[in-house]
Image (cartoon, rainbow, N blue to C red; front, side, top):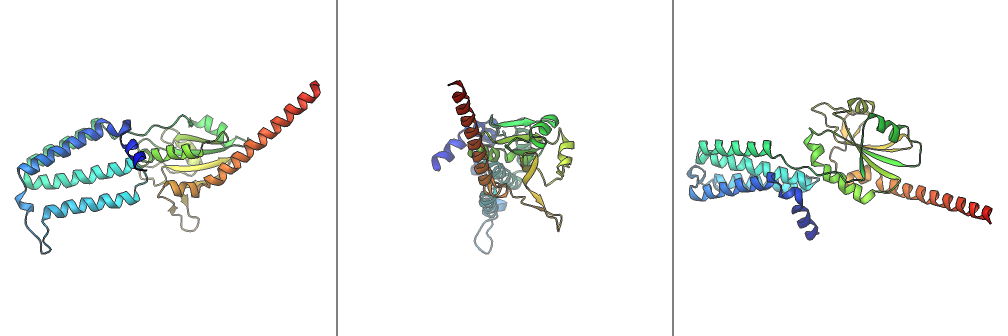
Length: 276
């Protein structure tokens, strides 16, 4: 487990300029802090804590909270850097407002010029458009299951959950259990046909839907028929496996594949018998 985590952290996207430059800026803050401690934050409260330590404690508390709730390492690191930057800017403001402005500008520059790198989709994930969605999903009557990931590139939630899609593909890839992505910002009419909102405030992105022989089997998140509220918004590996029934889908796909092999073997046997 530890070795796997280390290998993921040191994979290419985690040593991108976005992370390196943020670490450099955090290190620069530490040097400024050691050279010129903020006297305004050194006063003790009745519990014996300084205001500065309270700021760091709040940031650490947020780190721990996100560690329990973030579904991917990418989203966790994004949250850690966000809370760290906020804590740094608060402390710097009491040290020197001008210095806080400089660091704020540098953090913004890094975020704009070197945005957080995104995970790339594996080759097993096909990219759909309107025509291929109709051909491979809604009009497909073959014994195959297709799991479609509806996403939008402008949605941080979608890009942050991309590693989760990669993990699912690695665990549930099968010739008759296929994976695909559809960009709803390019094909909003397809999303509308599936009752998926593509508004900037939409809570439905990403939406993951499993289809078989042209029919929808399951989706996450879902809309409650009684209240109209979205359910299953917290997309995690376990919730997707359970909500989409991926274990059962894989068993069905394997049964279909075995059935096809048996039919092929029987046909080959009949053909060989005819030639004898």
